[in-house]
Length: 310
Image 1 (cartoon, rainbow, N blue to C red):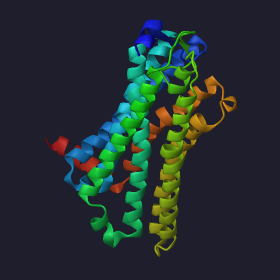
Image 2 (image 1 turned 180 degrees about the vertical axis):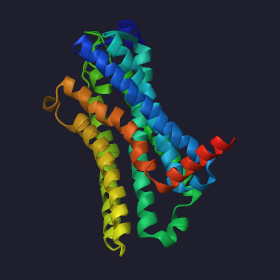
Image 3 (image 1 turned 90 degrees about the horizontal axis):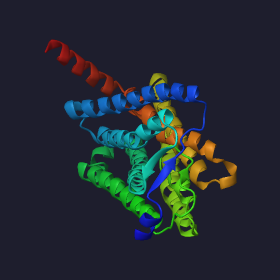
Image 4 (image 1 turned 90 degrees about the vertical axis):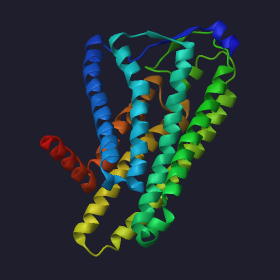
């Protein structure tokens, strides 16, 4: 670590290599998306904390997902917005590592939380009579703590492995934040161990969770097909299909980013892939998982009515 700090003191974030007018347009657009992300997830957290009717396991996990999405966006989007206004923005080595750790930690935690949420829905729909026995508050808290702890520990492993590398070559990161693959390209030593750990993490935190989510929703869809009511079947299928779209967007883009051969996607394409799983997904999660729910809409109406009366 001492060697790293003496050989390189800062990196240069190149950001989007576009025409300045396009960068200004993207700054306005992404600022709007960022505001929607904070507003949507913040609204979900506020409603869940204020309305006792939403104090259920499902919304307990949704509140954790909202926290992940807010912190995930706050860790990367402000730096991206700064780079759009001031390209080639320098960042210190310590600041780069401080940005990489929460990015990886929140990303890993979200993968596990999505699995936990799909399991919660599977038990609720396929085993409704045993739901309160299986999904107890003790189980919910244990699963949430496990998701956060595993995500943070694996992120710490990645950062420690980066700190052991010497950086003595060019200091230009062709990205708008300190993304781990872009940082590793600047190391002037063999990064095979880092690559092996990244691949293993992808297997256990991307491919494995995606398979579990697909199994859960396939069971849910089979249960939906047995619903006698056509209206109930339509609503349940609409909800599950929207959930699968978000899950597919998140896991699919991340798997392509970190598991496909490097030659399959150049660095500029990697920035676009990041926008899908690191920017658009946190914005879409509150719309898909929460704001479309009848219970959340009711809680929002009650909160607005209470505010207007006061």
